[in-house]
Length: 459
Image 1 (spheres, one colour):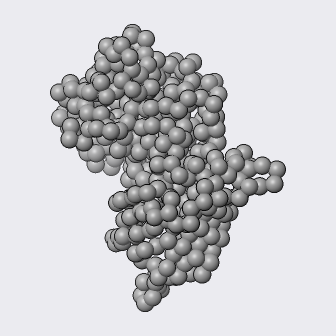
Image 2 (image 1 turned 120 degrees about the vertical axis):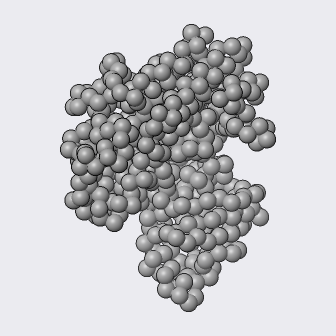
């Protein structure tokens, strides 16, 4: 069975598009967030003889999929073929064709034979057409937006960016986005045995950091911090949440302040929880802080960067909203009840939810690094926050599921305590004033558009 897909990229020549595919991180950027695909091993890139070993999870089962690359022709094509895996055969040809008038036509040709027996019945032609259609709609959209983002800074120097929390949802996406753009990423690791090329040791609890390893970086993106949603907020849990943010940020800021040569840009995570529970009030970056545990944490978190700011480091404080991706975070946790038709609004549903597409968040971080005029708090939220009820309805429509089972506020408080009150029942209507004024373009301004893209439900 042969399946073909294509897209036009009128603003990018074949060499540019091909080079993007050849850089580290391209496979991860092209893997859909709902796919649950783990890269076990890779070697040799996409040139002849290069190999990739994947672990693909589907429901309660998983299987290994081994692929080998061949027929490499720079700026023209490469192929990957299955050497071991669930299908009887698989050969995927990637072609990069120059368009009349400029640009590239990306063509994907797949020759595939489903497996025999019961597996063939489950992975048959109808299933393959449906799933590959979802896959390539997602791939082409992400390829288009990533190339557009990189083109904004094509005339600027390539950067070395050091990232804390690089293994998290945002950190991984940011890392792969940067490397496909030709930048170099250095990760902070807490195991000294893992330090070395591309990895810097640090331990915020003990105050240890390899400042010498950091000296070659242009910017630091600080994302590390204990998850606020991993369990009820006991006193011990709340101390851990606060300390994980303040200790790491103070160590990073102090280190940058003391360095004679090193990064002069620090993009440090914060959150819209800074504003507390504010009803329908529109909140730009100059709004006063609110009350509550999360507001207190955010104030301390942001305050921990002051030593770097006083030393002349440009500090950007990203007050992030809910980052939308099924690969993790809040959306990943809420998908199951919605998929089985028992999702619904929380509490009154009138509380505002400030959200941002994960791809837009990653791009905004890079925009903040390059944009000298940005400093201080920057709201990392989409331009159109929605109520919890509106978000619930949009998610239900994207999934094709009913959303008729509300969760009463009393049940949220009983199940989650203060965590439920502040994270689920309180809300903020946050606007990205500084981001838009600085020229940043959101590709996903509407919440349903973002959900459909991230969930592979775009038409």
